[in-house]
Length: 264
Image (cartoon, one colour):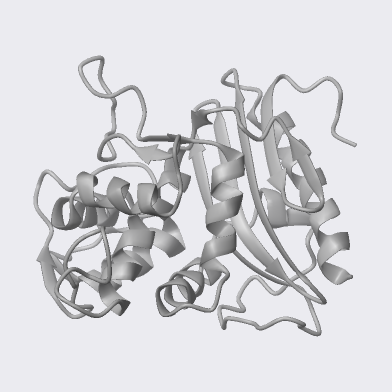
């Protein structure tokens, strides 16, 4: 059971396990980067000049992308502390997934384009889940109010697509397996946090691939858990600043339910 006295809104979609306000549109913080990574993965793996569909043209993993002053952004990531001026598309995607690097994200958005990202989201059946802007620190009144918005129902469905055995999905699942933040939903899921090798189902032990988002008053986590069975999830939380940890504890309780379900 979810705690009855949560100090905010918790939206949960774990198909076959738990649903709670799954259709509420909420800010996603860095979970919105999953949409960007989805389009990049499509562009890297799908053949043809149009990148295999409605998103856009083929991408080359080894293509170098210069980091411009406009890309640099504080918050999560490492690039603002490193003397790196150019990275490949593949390296930028890896940094975006593993450490949620904001500068890498902005460079990829500039290279790929928001329209292409959202076109891919629409093609995958996402109606309310969109990236609205680049990452900004700080976000000012003249900017879109948040980086991305979406619903737990749509994001758990996206996790299910990512867990499918398609080339783009397997690439993206591998990026998510390297995520360094397991403090939310996976915290009570017994797994090896350093196991970034994509596991098949059934698996002798539990395995997690995920993407998180953290902002003031926002905590989000979307992922895939594999064990005796596969469980895909999306948990989104919004609250007043200062109440985030109470929401995280509720997210961890959902993770415990997921662990039981995935263990079979």
